[in-house]
Length: 496
Image (tube, rainbow, N blue to C red):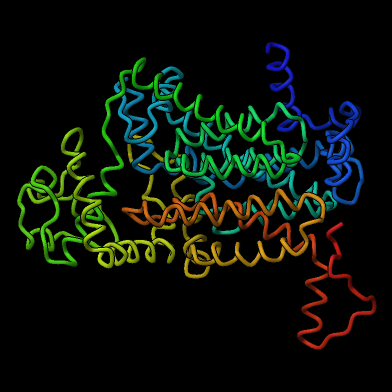
């Protein structure tokens, strides 16, 4: 176990900051079933640091591309520093200062920050690190796809600065942190077939779940990906799922038993939002007295917002607001919620439809400004950056674009599923689609950042696909508009 731990740490260092190591060292030869799978998918540790055309990564390529990626990430987040903080992260920051933790957000992060020492500098360092991970993983993918050094740097800059990605790249946000962790999982899925790395992937996934608990719904999806992408090893996929369960149990024991974290049941807002929506649509009070003391339909209708729970749960006056619930009151709300869905399915679907459409339209692409207690290092530069994002909000601010675009990209990649690295791209573009869909029954307040993981995955794989198959698309463009090309194009051009 100690030997594996050292090897795993060494592997992560090689992947993240020192791929030069891979130039001079091959993995052990494979045999039997592993050898056959190796021939089919054309993978090994050494080839993981070769681009799609089979050219080895040179030392100068590594250093130039790596340093360029870091500089691009710093350039991208510089105007945001110490990070565009939303109120979720502000709560984490406050809890880390006082040392009292609640499970409404990320108690593990609050505890970790309390040990390090909460400060704007800590947030700035974390914001920069997250941006470097996202941009660096994108740069790795571009270079592996076979693009030359200068093309890789240009595409990395485009990926970082395209408004949908850039809008939250410099945000100190749970959703940006999750995107960075899943990007690391993607790199670990494509760079090597070493069996033991499923432990690191499980660890990254569980860390993402502690940050964004909704992702626990994706554990079966990741287990299937583990099975499909890694030579259909059923035992490895099962071990991945079991390890995730054990890590999550250990996390819960730590935060509730060791840290004595206060239970706040944040899931209650989903039940309250749905019950309020069904009540308004059926003109029948379905909220219990402990959740809505006035028990007056007119008061509920006055504050109700079909797109957002905030106006009727966290605004004023307090005595007219819906109240969050815990314990026995929560169980009563859950019971009424199930009964209301069964009794009024159309009203429930209408409630879900309204908030889902608002989410897909792209509500709140920009976070509120960083609170005064954190402050911005460069406020004028920050506002100029926000203006750049706002100029393109009408075009890029919709979740319909990445959702429908991901479906099209998935169809295109599936037709070329035997090309190298394609299984990983297919798996993660499918993940982008599924991640958007799991939010549909969970949303109580639409926000662009909730689907940021899908946005990052879609834009990365879209850029990769367009440039990897650029000859095919240029040929298609020529045929549509009547241009002639001297050389015939292969439908798989650029994909080998």
